[in-house]
Every structure is written in C-alpha cells, then in structure tokens.
Amino acid sequence: MFFDEKGFKKDFKWGSSTNAQQFEGDHGQGGKGVSIADVRVIPGADKESNFNEFKIASDHYHHMKEDIKLYAEMGFEIYRFTIAWTRIFPNGDEIEANPEGIAFYSAMLDELDKYNIEPVATLYAYDLPLNLLEKYRGFMSREIIKDFTHYAETVIKAFKGRIKYWIPFNEQNFIDLDSEYMTGYKAKNRAEVFQLQHHFNLCYAKTTNLVHEIDPAAKVGGNLGNVCLYPLNCDPVNVEATDELAYKSGYGFADVLFRGVYSGIFIKSYEGTDFSSIVLDDDLEVLKSASPDFMALCYYLSAAIEANSFEDRALNGVITKNPYIDATEWKWPIDPYGFKHYLHDYYHRYQFIINYSTNWTI
Image (tube, rainbow, N blue to C red; front, side, top):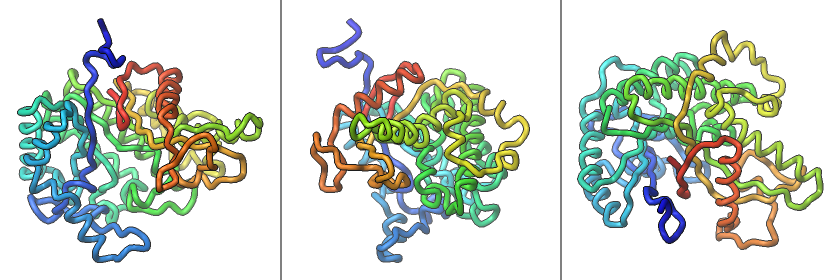
C-alpha cells in the first residue's frame, strides 16, 4: 500500500523551516560578517531595538543543540534551514571560507543526523553580505553571480553527501513585492526589479548545475511563496485580473525556475524595460541549462481578486474580502481548500512529483 490511513504517502515527512536572519542571531561571533539583515530597520519601529532584535533573533547560534532536540521531540523528520552567507564568507567575496562557519553547520548536521532528521539547506534568505551591497550594489550587479556561485560551490563541496536537498533562494518571486528587504537595494522602477530578478535567476541556474556536478546524488529545486488567487465572481473582468496577477506573482517566476524561459505575459509586466541591456548573450541558455529536481512552494492564504480594486505589491493588498470564509486577526483569509487548489494547480502546470507540506515540498 502506497498511502497511510490519512492518505499520505508512506515516505511523507513532516517538518518545518527557519531562516538564518530571523533565527540564528549573533553576527559578531564565530567570525560571521555583517549582512543587510543585521542593519535592517522595520519602518515605524524603534531603530536601535530592531538592530538588537535582528542581531539576537531567536539566539539559535547559542542554542542549536537544544533547539534541534526540541524539534525532534515534536516528531519532525525533516528540517529546512538557511545557511548564512556571512558565516561562510564574512564579506561575501573572500577566497577561503571561514572555518568557524563551516564548523557550525557541520555540528548542526551532526545533531540532525543524531535524531534522524533530514536536512534541507537554503542558500539565501535576504541576508546579503553588507560589503557586497556597498561594493557594487549587490544583486544589481552581474558581479554577484561570481561571488554567489563561489559561496554555493564552497558549501556544496563542504557538505557533499550530508545534505541531499538544496534550495538556492527562499521565495524568489517575492522580490517583486519588496526588493529592499530581499536585497538591500530599493529598486527605483520595474526595470530595476527585473534586473535584480534576472541576476537571481542566473545565480539559481548556475547553482542548480553546481549541485548536480558536485554531488549527483543530491537534489535541488527552486522555491516560490504565493497565495491562491480566486476571481471575486464570474465577471470576466475579474477573471482576467486574476489570471494576470497569477502570472505576474507566481507562474511567470515558475516558468523561469522550472522551464528556463521568460513567458510573454510575464515579460509584459515589466513593460518599458530595455531587456537587451540586462539579458546578455547566452543568459537564456544558462537559464535553460538548469534541470531542477523538485518544486518548493510556500502557501500563506487565498485572495479574492476584483479588477481595479487592489494594490498588487503586498500580500494584504491583493485581498478583497471573500464573503464565504473567515479571516485571522491579521485579516488573512483562513482557507484550507486554497492550499489544496494551489498545490494541484502548480502540479497540473509543471508536473513535478511532489509531496506536500504547508511550507515546502520535495
């Protein structure tokens, strides 16, 4: 029998995930350098307290063994975490890796192995080394490709055989919502958003190929965060608005990560961009050369879409109240069917063989 009594595959694993910039803390210890997350300030909040919050976060750096023990006690069998770039290369562009950073993640893998927890490593979750932002504007420059792939190659080689699943970028499509949070650089227009995203895509494709070259037994895939979009009603105007937003926020990015192409409807959302100055010779071949092994998806909520009544640059902004479902205190719709519909929709479009959880898939 392939499925258990609840309908899950026998090899299904329950797990959860963390991001280093929200969880580890202590950028000043273990040789770790300063990232954009360490100097990030939440608008409307006290500046100094937010510096301290991001520096300490959940203090996982000092409680790693305790945290993993608690994680195992909850019954989890798989764990997606982020490797902090600045723990491996404090300035982002060193030749040799920081041995203390390698040792920290090696010790983490030892603990996960002790409790039979499968590790899944994400390489970037919004914590660019601050030096690279100051040096060449980070992901706005093609120089980032060399530095990111050197970082990726270093950790893939360091943990070959110990990490079987790799995700180059966390929720890569959200750069369309907040480029400053994700990269440290606030895009001035849609053309600059595309430029940032294109450099993400080239780093993703090259890293995907590196995983396959360095550790053929390992698997690698992209990660998208999104919402399940419904038209508010059957008015074709609202259906069209839903379709366009779905491509702009999700399918267009999936086409790049899992098919290696920029679709026409996706490119249309960057109207006015001089693509010839950003997409150089052979770039499209690089994107097509990547063959990911899985699709990773994050689901937050569903959203009812009504044409011309929403601002599509924030999660809360795409919501017109859905009269058929309840909402949280944050006014986020509570919609378990939206999760199912979202997963089925992506599977039907991209035909990846995937197991499902609320945060990611393998």
